[in-house]
Image (cartoon, rainbow, N blue to C red; front, side, top):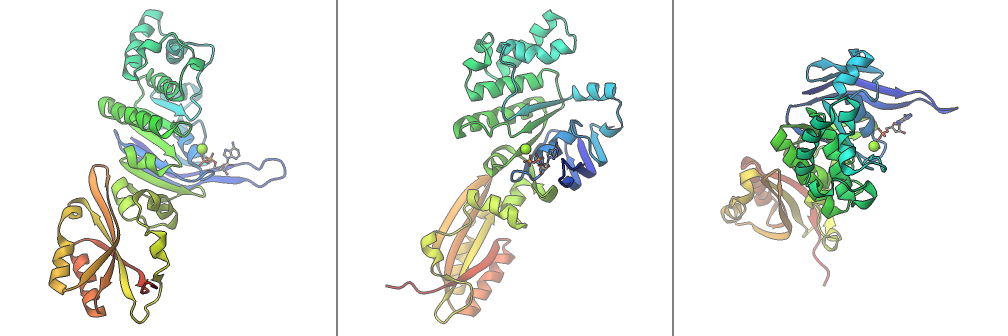
Length: 350
Ligand SMILES: Nc1ncnc2c1ncn2[C@@H]1O[C@H](COP(=O)(O)OP(=O)(O)O)[C@@H](O)[C@H]1O
Ligand SMILES: [Mg+2]
């Protein structure tokens, strides 16, 4: 649906400053009907990337294809037309304060010259879809943040787009409202088959609704893939710093003090075992413990769900000699569980 190839964007120097390379070597493919998340810290280049998709930002070099149309090759008139199939929502909603809810949603249709009666027929179902039918004659100042974003979503859908771009659409909302808006977007994605590209600095947003994710840093995509895979096996340190807090791969502070990076006399290895998919519920741990006569002292554990599939981590101290611990590690690997040695447990001081 969307293919970005070898995209670069450099902003010219401002004043006596130097040019800013906001995007470098961007290659990205987003499939039809996907919810694709792009995460990164402030200044990573997310908004610039999103804005190249509808060519609000013209790339310095590279190709932007949306629904088989090369966006960079369009004339101004063709681009206006192409943008009808790409809706956009924003962090601060961008509603017109002097217009009612109905008139805000109707605006793009008015601008496109649609007759009044047709506008009414188009807007009413959209207000129903976002749950704002009874607020149609209210003004933005009378609405909560979540309601304002619902208006933003209805307005973005008015021209029946194939793609919805979301620039931090939930970043100004409280957690509960964020969840409601994300569920609305997921519902729209399912019902209308709409492709959604959303950018965020919050990993919880990615975990909640995205199918795929790209991680950005310094204008580059440093890692991308299905959300489950990225959460289960984050390879770049920045990705890990996003993922670790939500899936709680870490260990409690009280136990960190007992962890030595190097082997020591009397210090048992501490392993982090990662379960994914159906393995999360399989009794492989107790089987290994029995087979190798190895006691595992559980330090910390959690089972979570990502994209409907179980995902768990378990931090254990292996109370055995190095041979049986090595055997356990290879047995875990054979059973397709992730395993890494976090360090060595120094005996607790009593
Ligand atoms: N219009 C612009 N002119 C100059 N520099 C810009 C412009 N827009 C963005 N930048 C710079 O490009 C980089 C990426 O910005 P942006 O895409 O807004 O990041 P993000 O959305 O991830 O916070 C930043 O260094 C920013 O200052
Ligand atoms: Mg931004």
